[in-house]
Image (cartoon, rainbow, N blue to C red; front, top):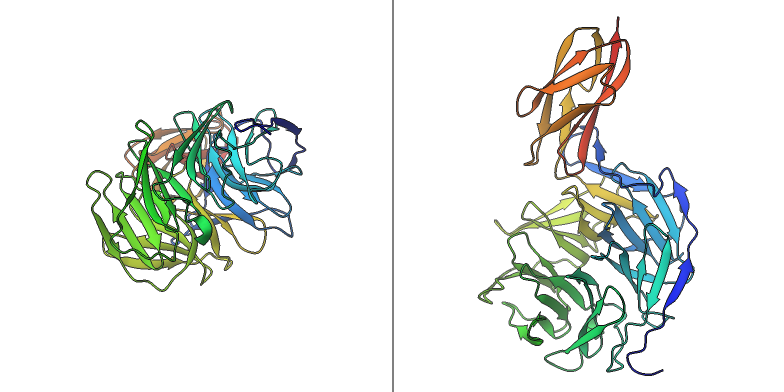
Length: 414
Protein backbone atom coordinates (compact mmCIF):
# COMPACT_ATOMS: atom_id res chain seq x y z
CA UNK A 1 0.00 0.00 0.00
CA UNK A 2 1.44 3.37 -0.97
CA UNK A 3 2.02 5.89 1.84
CA UNK A 4 -0.87 8.31 2.14
CA UNK A 5 -3.44 5.96 0.62
CA UNK A 6 -6.65 5.66 2.62
CA UNK A 7 -9.12 2.79 2.42
CA UNK A 8 -12.72 4.01 2.47
CA UNK A 9 -15.35 1.56 3.66
CA UNK A 10 -19.08 2.19 3.99
CA UNK A 11 -20.84 0.01 6.52
CA UNK A 12 -24.61 -0.03 6.88
CA UNK A 13 -25.47 -0.33 10.57
CA UNK A 14 -28.39 -1.94 12.35
CA UNK A 15 -30.03 0.12 15.09
CA UNK A 16 -31.52 -1.27 18.27
CA UNK A 17 -33.55 1.41 19.98
CA UNK A 18 -34.51 1.41 23.63
CA UNK A 19 -37.10 4.07 24.41
CA UNK A 20 -35.67 6.53 21.90
CA UNK A 21 -35.21 7.20 18.23
CA UNK A 22 -32.89 9.20 16.01
CA UNK A 23 -35.71 11.41 14.77
CA UNK A 24 -34.38 14.48 16.54
CA UNK A 25 -32.15 15.68 19.38
CA UNK A 26 -33.27 15.26 22.97
CA UNK A 27 -32.65 18.52 24.74
CA UNK A 28 -33.44 18.13 28.41
CA UNK A 29 -32.33 16.14 31.42
CA UNK A 30 -35.50 15.72 33.45
CA UNK A 31 -34.93 16.33 37.14
CA UNK A 32 -37.04 15.44 40.13
CA UNK A 33 -35.63 17.61 42.90
CA UNK A 34 -34.21 14.74 44.93
CA UNK A 35 -31.52 16.96 46.45
CA UNK A 36 -27.73 17.06 46.43
CA UNK A 37 -25.74 15.14 45.42
CA UNK A 38 -28.02 14.55 42.50
CA UNK A 39 -27.53 11.82 39.90
CA UNK A 40 -29.39 10.42 36.94
CA UNK A 41 -28.36 6.89 35.93
CA UNK A 42 -29.31 5.54 32.49
CA UNK A 43 -28.85 1.77 32.19
CA UNK A 44 -29.10 -0.02 28.85
CA UNK A 45 -30.60 -3.54 28.90
CA UNK A 46 -27.22 -4.97 27.92
CA UNK A 47 -25.94 -7.45 30.49
CA UNK A 48 -22.34 -7.39 29.30
CA UNK A 49 -19.97 -4.73 28.09
CA UNK A 50 -18.62 -1.64 29.78
CA UNK A 51 -18.41 1.60 27.81
CA UNK A 52 -14.81 2.73 27.28
CA UNK A 53 -15.07 6.38 26.20
CA UNK A 54 -17.65 9.16 26.33
CA UNK A 55 -18.27 12.45 24.52
CA UNK A 56 -20.94 15.00 23.69
CA UNK A 57 -22.17 14.25 20.20
CA UNK A 58 -22.95 16.70 17.40
CA UNK A 59 -26.67 16.06 18.01
CA UNK A 60 -26.64 17.34 21.59
CA UNK A 61 -26.76 13.82 23.06
CA UNK A 62 -24.16 11.85 25.02
CA UNK A 63 -22.36 9.04 23.18
CA UNK A 64 -20.19 6.26 24.59
CA UNK A 65 -18.13 3.58 22.87
CA UNK A 66 -18.00 -0.09 23.80
CA UNK A 67 -15.48 -2.72 22.76
CA UNK A 68 -17.29 -5.94 23.75
CA UNK A 69 -19.74 -6.15 22.11
CA UNK A 70 -18.54 -3.46 19.70
CA UNK A 71 -20.87 -0.53 19.36
CA UNK A 72 -22.07 2.87 20.55
CA UNK A 73 -24.51 3.88 23.25
CA UNK A 74 -26.48 7.11 22.87
CA UNK A 75 -28.29 8.81 25.76
CA UNK A 76 -30.60 11.67 24.88
CA UNK A 77 -31.10 14.48 27.32
CA UNK A 78 -34.52 13.07 28.20
CA UNK A 79 -32.96 9.71 29.12
CA UNK A 80 -33.90 7.83 25.94
CA UNK A 81 -31.32 5.17 25.05
CA UNK A 82 -30.20 3.88 21.68
CA UNK A 83 -27.68 1.13 20.95
CA UNK A 84 -25.73 1.17 17.68
CA UNK A 85 -23.94 -2.13 16.97
CA UNK A 86 -20.66 -1.76 15.07
CA UNK A 87 -19.77 -5.29 13.94
CA UNK A 88 -17.03 -3.96 11.63
CA UNK A 89 -15.27 -1.81 14.21
CA UNK A 90 -13.67 -1.92 17.64
CA UNK A 91 -14.49 1.64 18.77
CA UNK A 92 -12.30 3.57 21.16
CA UNK A 93 -12.21 7.30 21.86
CA UNK A 94 -14.86 9.68 20.49
CA UNK A 95 -15.28 13.30 19.42
CA UNK A 96 -17.91 15.41 17.67
CA UNK A 97 -16.66 16.55 14.26
CA UNK A 98 -17.39 19.96 12.77
CA UNK A 99 -19.03 18.08 9.86
CA UNK A 100 -21.84 16.86 12.11
CA UNK A 101 -20.54 13.29 12.31
CA UNK A 102 -19.36 11.39 15.36
CA UNK A 103 -15.70 10.44 14.95
CA UNK A 104 -14.04 7.48 16.65
CA UNK A 105 -10.76 5.64 16.78
CA UNK A 106 -10.23 1.92 16.31
CA UNK A 107 -9.71 0.83 19.90
CA UNK A 108 -6.96 -1.72 19.18
CA UNK A 109 -5.30 0.32 16.43
CA UNK A 110 -4.56 -2.67 14.21
CA UNK A 111 -7.87 -3.40 12.54
CA UNK A 112 -9.12 -2.64 9.05
CA UNK A 113 -9.17 1.09 9.75
CA UNK A 114 -7.81 3.45 12.37
CA UNK A 115 -10.26 6.37 12.31
CA UNK A 116 -13.95 6.35 11.36
CA UNK A 117 -16.90 8.73 11.19
CA UNK A 118 -20.48 7.76 12.01
CA UNK A 119 -23.25 9.67 10.22
CA UNK A 120 -26.11 10.18 12.67
CA UNK A 121 -28.65 10.69 9.86
CA UNK A 122 -27.77 7.94 7.39
CA UNK A 123 -26.37 5.51 10.02
CA UNK A 124 -23.36 4.87 7.82
CA UNK A 125 -19.88 4.33 9.21
CA UNK A 126 -17.10 5.64 6.97
CA UNK A 127 -13.66 4.21 7.75
CA UNK A 128 -10.34 5.87 6.94
CA UNK A 129 -6.78 4.66 7.25
CA UNK A 130 -5.18 7.27 9.47
CA UNK A 131 -1.80 6.73 7.84
CA UNK A 132 -0.12 9.83 6.42
CA UNK A 133 2.65 10.12 3.87
CA UNK A 134 5.22 9.06 6.43
CA UNK A 135 3.59 5.65 6.82
CA UNK A 136 3.40 6.21 10.58
CA UNK A 137 0.49 4.57 12.38
CA UNK A 138 -1.92 5.76 15.05
CA UNK A 139 -1.13 4.69 18.59
CA UNK A 140 -3.65 2.29 20.09
CA UNK A 141 -4.40 4.41 23.16
CA UNK A 142 -4.59 7.77 21.41
CA UNK A 143 -7.41 10.09 22.27
CA UNK A 144 -9.07 12.08 19.49
CA UNK A 145 -10.04 15.76 19.26
CA UNK A 146 -11.76 18.01 16.76
CA UNK A 147 -11.28 21.63 15.76
CA UNK A 148 -11.55 23.81 12.64
CA UNK A 149 -12.52 20.96 10.31
CA UNK A 150 -9.72 18.65 11.44
CA UNK A 151 -9.64 15.48 13.53
CA UNK A 152 -6.51 15.23 15.69
CA UNK A 153 -4.84 12.07 16.98
CA UNK A 154 -1.38 10.77 17.90
CA UNK A 155 0.85 8.50 15.85
CA UNK A 156 4.02 6.85 17.07
CA UNK A 157 6.26 9.62 15.69
CA UNK A 158 3.79 12.43 14.94
CA UNK A 159 0.79 14.40 16.06
CA UNK A 160 -1.55 14.05 13.09
CA UNK A 161 -4.66 15.79 11.76
CA UNK A 162 -7.12 14.41 9.22
CA UNK A 163 -9.51 16.71 7.38
CA UNK A 164 -13.15 15.81 7.96
CA UNK A 165 -13.34 14.96 4.24
CA UNK A 166 -10.75 12.25 4.86
CA UNK A 167 -8.68 13.41 1.89
CA UNK A 168 -5.83 15.13 3.70
CA UNK A 169 -3.58 14.11 6.58
CA UNK A 170 -1.06 16.48 8.10
CA UNK A 171 1.72 15.18 10.34
CA UNK A 172 3.81 17.09 12.86
CA UNK A 173 6.88 15.40 14.41
CA UNK A 174 7.15 15.15 18.17
CA UNK A 175 9.92 17.20 19.75
CA UNK A 176 11.42 13.86 20.90
CA UNK A 177 11.21 10.67 18.82
CA UNK A 178 9.39 8.40 19.13
CA UNK A 179 6.40 9.23 21.33
CA UNK A 180 6.50 8.00 24.90
CA UNK A 181 3.01 6.57 24.53
CA UNK A 182 4.16 3.21 25.86
CA UNK A 183 3.05 4.37 29.31
CA UNK A 184 -0.57 4.86 28.19
CA UNK A 185 -2.34 7.48 26.16
CA UNK A 186 -1.33 9.68 24.54
CA UNK A 187 -4.00 12.24 25.34
CA UNK A 188 -5.05 15.36 23.46
CA UNK A 189 -6.85 18.59 24.23
CA UNK A 190 -7.49 21.68 22.12
CA UNK A 191 -6.49 25.00 23.72
CA UNK A 192 -8.62 28.12 23.72
CA UNK A 193 -6.37 29.57 21.00
CA UNK A 194 -6.77 26.36 18.90
CA UNK A 195 -3.30 25.10 19.72
CA UNK A 196 -3.05 21.35 20.27
CA UNK A 197 -1.77 20.04 23.58
CA UNK A 198 -0.63 16.42 23.74
CA UNK A 199 0.54 14.32 26.65
CA UNK A 200 2.50 11.08 26.51
CA UNK A 201 5.15 9.21 28.47
CA UNK A 202 7.64 12.00 27.70
CA UNK A 203 5.54 14.79 29.17
CA UNK A 204 3.22 17.57 28.06
CA UNK A 205 3.68 19.07 24.60
CA UNK A 206 2.25 22.05 22.73
CA UNK A 207 1.77 22.20 18.95
CA UNK A 208 0.96 25.35 16.99
CA UNK A 209 -0.76 24.18 13.77
CA UNK A 210 -0.08 27.54 12.09
CA UNK A 211 3.69 27.14 12.28
CA UNK A 212 3.97 23.35 12.71
CA UNK A 213 6.30 23.86 15.66
CA UNK A 214 5.97 21.74 18.78
CA UNK A 215 7.78 21.64 22.10
CA UNK A 216 7.47 19.96 25.44
CA UNK A 217 6.34 22.29 28.21
CA UNK A 218 8.05 21.93 31.59
CA UNK A 219 5.64 20.72 34.25
CA UNK A 220 5.89 21.89 37.87
CA UNK A 221 6.39 18.26 38.87
CA UNK A 222 7.81 15.90 36.25
CA UNK A 223 7.11 12.20 36.78
CA UNK A 224 8.50 10.27 33.82
CA UNK A 225 6.65 7.04 34.60
CA UNK A 226 3.20 8.51 33.92
CA UNK A 227 1.41 9.83 30.87
CA UNK A 228 -0.41 12.96 32.02
CA UNK A 229 -4.15 13.22 31.54
CA UNK A 230 -4.85 16.63 30.06
CA UNK A 231 -7.84 18.94 29.63
CA UNK A 232 -8.64 22.60 28.89
CA UNK A 233 -10.50 24.65 31.50
CA UNK A 234 -13.10 27.35 30.90
CA UNK A 235 -10.51 30.09 31.49
CA UNK A 236 -8.18 28.62 28.84
CA UNK A 237 -5.71 27.04 31.23
CA UNK A 238 -4.32 23.56 30.59
CA UNK A 239 -4.74 21.07 33.42
CA UNK A 240 -2.67 17.90 33.63
CA UNK A 241 -2.69 15.03 36.08
CA UNK A 242 0.30 12.74 36.42
CA UNK A 243 1.17 10.22 39.11
CA UNK A 244 -0.75 11.92 41.90
CA UNK A 245 -0.19 15.58 40.95
CA UNK A 246 -2.75 18.02 39.54
CA UNK A 247 -0.92 20.67 37.50
CA UNK A 248 -2.16 23.90 35.96
CA UNK A 249 -0.30 25.47 33.03
CA UNK A 250 -0.88 29.03 31.84
CA UNK A 251 -0.63 28.68 28.03
CA UNK A 252 0.47 32.30 27.60
CA UNK A 253 3.35 32.29 30.07
CA UNK A 254 4.07 28.57 30.36
CA UNK A 255 4.14 28.93 34.14
CA UNK A 256 2.65 26.13 36.18
CA UNK A 257 1.42 25.22 39.61
CA UNK A 258 1.05 21.78 41.16
CA UNK A 259 -1.06 20.25 43.91
CA UNK A 260 -0.28 16.92 45.52
CA UNK A 261 0.80 14.26 45.79
CA UNK A 262 -2.58 12.54 46.05
CA UNK A 263 -2.86 8.81 46.48
CA UNK A 264 -5.15 8.09 43.58
CA UNK A 265 -5.12 6.69 40.06
CA UNK A 266 -7.85 7.33 37.57
CA UNK A 267 -9.12 6.64 34.06
CA UNK A 268 -9.99 10.06 32.71
CA UNK A 269 -10.82 13.64 33.59
CA UNK A 270 -12.70 16.70 32.36
CA UNK A 271 -12.83 20.36 33.34
CA UNK A 272 -16.24 21.23 34.74
CA UNK A 273 -18.03 24.54 34.12
CA UNK A 274 -17.90 25.19 37.88
CA UNK A 275 -14.09 25.42 37.81
CA UNK A 276 -13.51 21.96 39.30
CA UNK A 277 -11.67 19.10 37.62
CA UNK A 278 -13.75 15.91 37.53
CA UNK A 279 -12.13 12.50 37.26
CA UNK A 280 -12.85 8.78 37.45
CA UNK A 281 -10.76 7.20 40.22
CA UNK A 282 -9.62 3.61 40.06
CA UNK A 283 -10.80 3.29 43.67
CA UNK A 284 -13.25 3.83 45.29
CA UNK A 285 -16.28 3.53 42.99
CA UNK A 286 -17.20 7.20 42.74
CA UNK A 287 -16.83 10.35 40.67
CA UNK A 288 -13.97 12.46 41.95
CA UNK A 289 -13.58 16.21 41.83
CA UNK A 290 -10.60 18.46 42.47
CA UNK A 291 -11.12 22.08 43.50
CA UNK A 292 -8.09 24.17 42.43
CA UNK A 293 -9.31 27.09 44.55
CA UNK A 294 -8.61 25.27 47.80
CA UNK A 295 -6.73 22.17 46.63
CA UNK A 296 -9.34 19.79 48.00
CA UNK A 297 -10.40 16.42 46.60
CA UNK A 298 -14.02 15.22 46.90
CA UNK A 299 -15.73 11.94 46.07
CA UNK A 300 -19.31 11.92 44.76
CA UNK A 301 -20.96 8.52 45.20
CA UNK A 302 -23.82 7.49 42.94
CA UNK A 303 -27.02 6.13 44.49
CA UNK A 304 -26.45 2.59 43.21
CA UNK A 305 -22.76 2.45 44.07
CA UNK A 306 -21.50 2.35 40.48
CA UNK A 307 -18.11 3.88 39.84
CA UNK A 308 -17.23 6.35 37.11
CA UNK A 309 -15.12 5.66 34.04
CA UNK A 310 -14.35 8.11 31.23
CA UNK A 311 -15.89 11.53 31.91
CA UNK A 312 -17.07 14.48 29.83
CA UNK A 313 -19.09 17.68 30.18
CA UNK A 314 -22.52 17.49 28.57
CA UNK A 315 -24.33 20.23 26.66
CA UNK A 316 -26.45 20.68 29.79
CA UNK A 317 -23.41 21.76 31.83
CA UNK A 318 -23.44 18.54 33.87
CA UNK A 319 -20.77 15.86 34.29
CA UNK A 320 -21.41 12.63 32.37
CA UNK A 321 -19.56 9.38 32.87
CA UNK A 322 -19.59 5.75 31.80
CA UNK A 323 -20.43 3.71 34.87
CA UNK A 324 -20.63 0.39 36.62
CA UNK A 325 -20.45 -3.23 35.60
CA UNK A 326 -23.26 -2.84 33.05
CA UNK A 327 -23.59 -0.70 29.95
CA UNK A 328 -24.70 2.47 31.74
CA UNK A 329 -24.21 6.23 31.66
CA UNK A 330 -24.43 8.50 34.69
CA UNK A 331 -25.09 12.24 34.83
CA UNK A 332 -23.87 14.10 37.90
CA UNK A 333 -26.11 17.15 38.02
CA UNK A 334 -24.30 20.42 38.66
CA UNK A 335 -27.23 22.54 37.45
CA UNK A 336 -29.76 21.22 39.94
CA UNK A 337 -33.34 22.34 39.41
CA UNK A 338 -36.54 21.74 41.39
CA UNK A 339 -39.92 23.43 41.48
CA UNK A 340 -42.51 23.58 44.24
CA UNK A 341 -45.21 22.53 44.20
CA UNK A 342 -44.31 19.66 41.88
CA UNK A 343 -47.96 18.85 41.15
CA UNK A 344 -50.96 21.17 41.09
CA UNK A 345 -54.76 20.83 41.05
CA UNK A 346 -56.57 23.97 39.89
CA UNK A 347 -60.05 25.16 39.15
CA UNK A 348 -60.71 26.96 35.89
CA UNK A 349 -59.63 30.59 36.33
CA UNK A 350 -57.56 29.89 39.45
CA UNK A 351 -53.87 30.69 39.72
CA UNK A 352 -50.97 29.17 41.60
CA UNK A 353 -47.38 30.34 42.09
CA UNK A 354 -44.55 27.99 41.12
CA UNK A 355 -41.23 28.62 42.85
CA UNK A 356 -37.99 27.19 41.47
CA UNK A 357 -34.72 26.41 43.19
CA UNK A 358 -31.76 26.35 40.80
CA UNK A 359 -28.02 25.97 41.40
CA UNK A 360 -26.99 27.14 37.91
CA UNK A 361 -26.47 30.60 36.48
CA UNK A 362 -28.92 30.62 33.58
CA UNK A 363 -32.24 32.46 33.38
CA UNK A 364 -35.13 30.05 33.85
CA UNK A 365 -37.88 29.58 31.30
CA UNK A 366 -41.34 28.00 31.54
CA UNK A 367 -43.90 26.77 29.06
CA UNK A 368 -47.12 24.81 29.13
CA UNK A 369 -47.57 21.56 27.24
CA UNK A 370 -51.17 22.59 26.46
CA UNK A 371 -52.10 26.25 26.72
CA UNK A 372 -55.77 25.36 26.23
CA UNK A 373 -55.59 23.72 29.69
CA UNK A 374 -53.08 25.86 31.59
CA UNK A 375 -50.99 28.93 30.85
CA UNK A 376 -47.84 30.07 32.62
CA UNK A 377 -46.00 33.39 32.86
CA UNK A 378 -42.91 34.65 34.65
CA UNK A 379 -43.42 36.70 37.80
CA UNK A 380 -39.81 36.83 39.02
CA UNK A 381 -36.36 35.36 38.47
CA UNK A 382 -37.42 32.02 39.97
CA UNK A 383 -41.19 32.34 40.20
CA UNK A 384 -43.97 31.68 37.70
CA UNK A 385 -47.75 31.95 37.77
CA UNK A 386 -49.85 29.11 36.33
CA UNK A 387 -53.51 29.76 35.42
CA UNK A 388 -56.17 27.13 34.80
CA UNK A 389 -57.93 27.65 31.45
CA UNK A 390 -60.10 24.58 30.91
CA UNK A 391 -60.60 21.15 32.41
CA UNK A 392 -57.85 18.68 31.53
CA UNK A 393 -54.29 17.60 32.29
CA UNK A 394 -51.03 19.23 31.19
CA UNK A 395 -47.50 19.88 32.37
CA UNK A 396 -45.52 23.04 33.01
CA UNK A 397 -41.90 22.64 31.95
CA UNK A 398 -39.43 24.85 33.83
CA UNK A 399 -35.99 24.77 32.17
CA UNK A 400 -32.69 26.61 32.03
CA UNK A 401 -32.41 26.63 28.24
CA UNK A 402 -29.31 24.42 28.03
CA UNK A 403 -30.81 21.03 28.81
CA UNK A 404 -32.00 20.86 32.42
CA UNK A 405 -35.71 20.82 33.14
CA UNK A 406 -38.33 20.05 35.78
CA UNK A 407 -41.89 19.03 34.97
CA UNK A 408 -44.84 20.16 37.10
CA UNK A 409 -47.99 18.12 36.54
CA UNK A 410 -51.20 20.17 36.41
CA UNK A 411 -54.84 19.04 36.64
CA UNK A 412 -57.54 21.62 35.96
CA UNK A 413 -61.11 21.00 37.07
CA UNK A 414 -64.23 22.98 36.18
